[in-house]
Image (cartoon, rainbow, N blue to C red; front, side, top):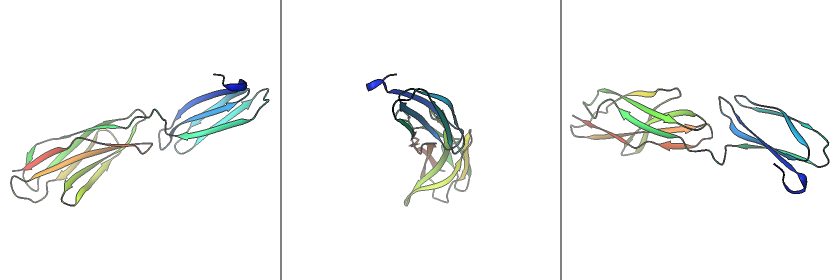
Length: 162
C-alpha cells in the first residue's frame, strides 16, 4: 500500500518452527521482496530495489502486536488420592503461533513448586502426592509459554488426600 510521498510499505509474516515468530517489514520507494524465509534461530531476507529514488528501511520486529497469549486447561486423572500415590496431570494448550512448553506446578506454603515441563503434546506429567494428612488439599496448575515468551496459567485443579 502507498504511504506519503509514494513510499511503499511491504510486509511479510514469517514463522519458524523454533524460537522465532515475528514479522518482517520494509518501507521504501520502489522495493520488491525477492526472498523471505524463517529458520530455527534466524530470519533471512533479501530485497531487490527497482528504480529507487529514496532510502530503504527494513525492520525486524519480534512478536506481533496481534499475537495472543497461549491458552491452557489442566485436568487430573483423579480428584482424590492417597499420600504417596502417583497421579497423572494433563494439559490442553494452544496458541496462534504454537506452544513451546507447558510446565506443571504444585502450590504449597512456599509458593509454586515446579514439578516438571513437557515440550510435546500431549502435555502431561506424573506426580507423587506429597506425604500429608487425610483431607489435605493439594492445588496444581499448568503454565503454557509460547515462542514470544508470552505465558498463561490454567485454572487450578485440586486433589484431596484420602
